[in-house]
Image (cartoon, helix red, strand yellow):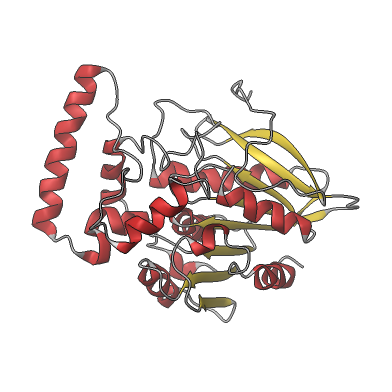
Length: 324
């Protein structure tokens, strides 16, 4: 299968500085739906032999130039070959229409990254892990349940996007509210078809209302400021295709997470509004190779980019243990 021709930016346009300890290049690979994905590959300088490898994605609505790239570059500094990729339909990756999310296709994106890593001459195909941030934490667990090639999985500041779409924040949505939301979204499908275009849901609210909940302020502080803004990030700009929510409402992703046999590390901030996603997901995991790490005083986006809070020493030791 030939990869779709993508236009990739060659300039360093990340939200974090370039490391002089790693080699960096752009790569592409395809998933089994024929969508070509764009990624940044980070390789330790002067590396020899076959390396353990890690594929990184997230947060939900972000691009590889933001948090996932920071994780990937930092792990490469610590001896792993890593890629940070844009999910299907977003960033520099292919797929049309744009700005669509799918519990199936986005889980597949992780396995497609494993496909790519498995055939690289400088990668040990028996030592491949994945790392998902925010909504891609849930996708990572879903991929780990399905893809036995994945030997170690980290979910950082995790969201279960199927749960939050179907039940609302803090499970506040009942069946009647869900029905009304389905009615509205399906009416929007009709309008989208009439207009031959897809309505976007809007990214992080801007300007920020004074009475906004803390978690909205938390997202604003990352996506709408110099700290994390990126021109290709959905959350920094126009947001997702509105009707993407329908598939997430109808297809829970963590049905078989209790069957994951490979190692899993779940990390979350103590004061994150989203902490319950990680705690509940962890309760369903089985085996003595599963661990939940709560970071004291950290909020949700602290685990996006705060180098003094993200537990990189723990990440390194976890991957070293289970990608050995």
